[in-house]
Image (cartoon, rainbow, N blue to C red; front, top):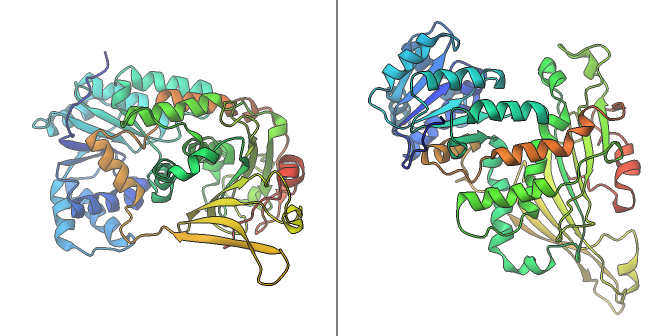
Length: 466
């Protein structure tokens, strides 16, 4: 039977994969900031198979924090983090590893287990935890990807839910911990002025771009097993769509947000070949670990429809890619034109309609595009944008926010089982039934077919500024 759900904050954090790159680049710096802010005061037990001692883990923590953005600006906080560290070295397939972990947690009654390891090891680790009773009154945090298609996602979920209750499972996607992503949810439901026009009657289309101006950075073998559709569209971009389109939660609570998002995924129409344009930047096949004749997409653009009362008939155009013109994340909501062209210039097809723009990265801002009259006797206008910067020096790094939420049991920014499987159903067909990847030049905005064949009269694409 799955372990019971803890009713209070966890009294320890166990993280598997303590010697890996994710721990070095993101986890240790985030734990350091959590100690500085006072959100981490419990023991932290690292588990890995590296023939390390505790001193090695402590040294890795110091080095990781020192090399991170901002470095060590509070030496006392760093030493507090080091003092919280514990270590268990061992093979995840060896039962004695989990026996030693249980001994380390002898004085802890409600741990949170964070699996910063490949998904292929999730089943092995959760079964090991169950074998020594460490799933009782515990939570488990698992890293994406949550499967690579619908069938594997179901298998993965079955493995984990056989040991942990669904309410104790936290599927972490660092993208959802970004401040600008959380602001989408807040903006929608904290400002009543947009609700009357946030529907098919007033919105023409929505474009979402998540672009990178670099390649696979030596991770060719990983990308060969993923591709842009799996790596970004099915999770990151779909999550943005859900936050933009979900109905208002019926009550204030973590479960209400998850339920509202899940309904969006269930209403998404499954993609077909005609909804999907694939691209591959020229030179990708020369990357280390990439097959000579690889057809893996480094660019993906899709046309998505949500078959709900609010959004029926509104197309959502999503695109992502490597080696594009700039690294940027942006959402553009295009509103329909006025029903009657009172002023001649406002009906010019080359003049853009009103739009709401969310800049997600590298900086955060919200822009509202409007037309205003030019000075003079004639009723001729031009476009202006009301701009609101949303950047703040107080922003927390995604892992800092998400790990703190997991320790508290706040699941609002995590993904639930039904949402994971519903999202995979949308893309499952085109994972295999698709056209070949189209070559595109590095530094461009991807294949031209993404405009002519996909977006059509709803275009052009809004190419974000650098």
